[in-house]
Each structure stands twice: as structure tokens, then as C-alpha cells.
Length: 122
Length: 144
Image 1 (cartoon, each protein chain N blue to C red):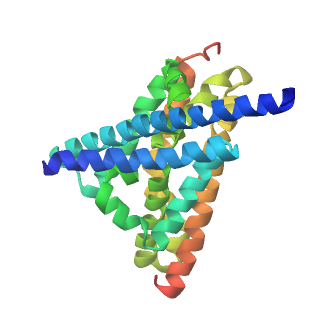
Image 2 (tube, rainbow over the protein chains, first blue to last red):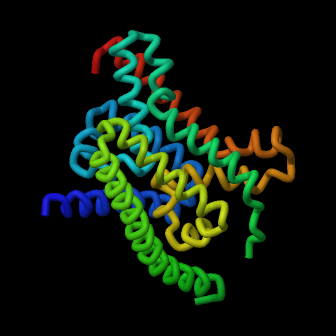
């Protein structure tokens, strides 16, 4: 039961993050690219304010998989790096924490560009 | 009611029903991707990954799946229905990186793929890093 609830909350909370973005796109004509950027920055801000961590503890992947979770990873990485190496950590923390995801995406992007050709859009 | 008013009225009605439809699909598909991530996370923890590494592995796995689906042209079809449901999870970031890489390879591997791969990733990395640096400075001086 405990196990199942974990999935339910990940589903519901993650779904709600998407609904908020969908409303922003439909109602304000904000572009998807802006949604991505503002979600990441909001994730950093909400983590800094101590609001996001409880959501992560509650919904796990429901909060870490949306791009706000990317911001969360940045903020946590910065905290850790500043704790370890002082002010220098402010420069190294953000990208160290997200290196895995960013590198995976661009390397896979390159590999895909070798394998696949662009599909004609209908 | 003249032609313009009528057009506005019809658009208004159409919009209302499409809001509901768009949000439902965004909720269901976005929720599904997060639940899938949860399943992967539990799998990696079960296989002995550290808590922190498990999160990164989940991101990488979802990025991998989204990249392949983008390459096969399937991602666009799902995204057309899902809207923000595939955009907001890390899958949207992966798609935004892989899609321009594939589309611009005719422009060459330096200024085509190499540059355009960062069309969306660039702003995300820039503003992510920027907010990270700002927070890092605040955190260093105030400790919060």
C-alpha cells in the first residue's frame, strides 16, 4: 500500500506541474521554451526558499522529474559546493549537480543526429 | 451579433473545451512519466544505487527514452496530444536538445548540429546557472 501511494503521489504532483504549464501556454501564449526556462529558475528559487524540498520528500519523482526538479538539483548542488569549498562553490555547484543530465542529453543528441534523419512534418 | 462577435463567441467556446482537454492530457501523460520515473528510481535503489545517483540515473534513463522516441519521430506525435505533459518532465528538455540536432544536420556538424543543439538547452543552462550562482552567493553570505 505504502509502495502504491508513492506512485500515486508522483503521478498526481508531477501531473499538476504539467497542468500549470499547460494553462500558462494556453492562457498566456507563453512559449514552451520560456516555460522550460522559468520552471528551472522557479525550481532554484523555491528550493532556496525551502519550499521545494518538502515537495520532493512528499512526491519524490513527481517533483524531481519535472524541470523544476532540475532547478532543485542546481540549488542543492550549489549548497553542497558552497559548504565544501566556500564562495567558489557558487560557480561550480550548479553544473556539477546537473552534469549527468546535460551531458547525456547533448551526447545523445549528437548520436541521434548521426543515426536519424528529420521526418517530414505533416 | 455581427460576424466578428460571433467568431469571438465560437472561439471562446472552443477554447474552453480545449483548455479542459489539453489539461487532462497534460496531467495524465505528465503524471505517467513521473510515475515511470518513480518505478525506475525504485529499480535503481533496489539494484544498490545511492539515493543521489538514483535521481541522476532516472533523469538519464528518461532522457534516453525521449531521445530515441524523438529520433524515431514518435515523440512529436505524443507531444502533440500531451502538450505540457511531455514538455515539463525532463523528457521535454531531451526532446528540445535532440530534435534541433537531427533537423539541422544538413547545415553541418559545427554550425548546424553543434550550435543548434543548444537552441533550447542554452537558455536553460544559462538561466539555470545564473540563478544557481545568485543563490550560491546569497547562501554563502547569509547561510540560508
